[in-house]
Image 1 (cartoon, one colour):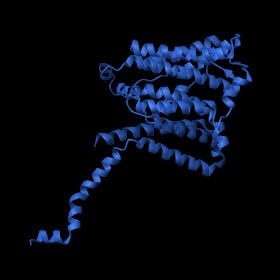
Image 2 (tube, one colour; image 1 turned 90 degrees about the horizontal axis):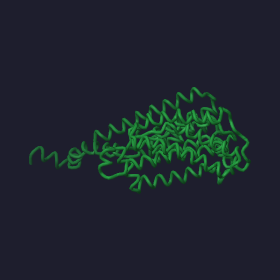
Image 3 (spheres, one colour; image 1 turned 180 degrees about the vertical axis):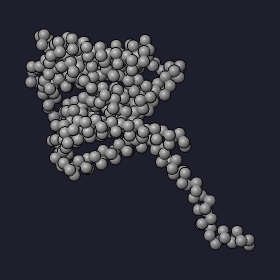
Image 4 (spheres, one colour; image 1 turned 90 degrees about the vertical axis):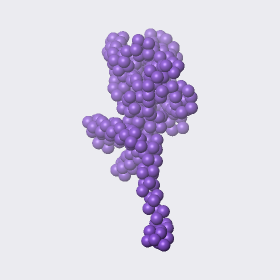
Length: 344
């Protein structure tokens, strides 16, 4: 028996581990790197850490009654985030949602104050949002102007129209029944909260199971290839921007009901909040990547961060700094995760 065979006989297990041990490490790392939900897991961990800290320094902040009362500021952003997510998945963007929301609110108020029934004023608000979104979609899908340019222009245009027709003044005095829409709780949630949950569930099913969802990702990955493969890219974009406008019209109704005033600046800055939440939730600004779970986690983390800082320190500058830092961290995380998958 040679010396080598003797060593193998004395240490058979050690000889086997020596042959397979080094290969097991890289394999495990590859499996970890290929896990598709890292972004969502990290957001969940951050949210848990935030709530744990908030509970330790301000226990009242986590009381259900307080959270329900503060959620008024969440649901409009959440409703607008769903169509925005699908638009960004295609590689587009809609900067006009805030101005569309403002214009819809003003049209609702003027229609009602000029003697129209409440239901007709509500229809006019949603129809205004739909028309604004349809106009964006025409220029993006058919004229093929870049969505950043189109929606930046309509952001200013819709806001100007809202200022003009309202003469820059607030319009109030709506029926108590209408105001109750935004203040009534159903099983602990506002009506717009339940609307968001239903819409989010439907969106998740469409993105995961329906051909429409697969087409969105295909357009985001390579629009030209998607068009040549028979996907109706123009019709889908027109639909998405119209849906975004209609959601802005509905959000305007909830916002007016909550504050009992329609103003031309009602949706000011809303587009930034919505886009921040969507991108923070892991949706790639270049299109083709993202999911509803990440968007919901992004919405919750940004909302809880904003509300806790306001609750504890009442410092708007600190809110902006921390939200900006979280967004930068999210983008860097996406780059790191994408680099890790590419390196496999």
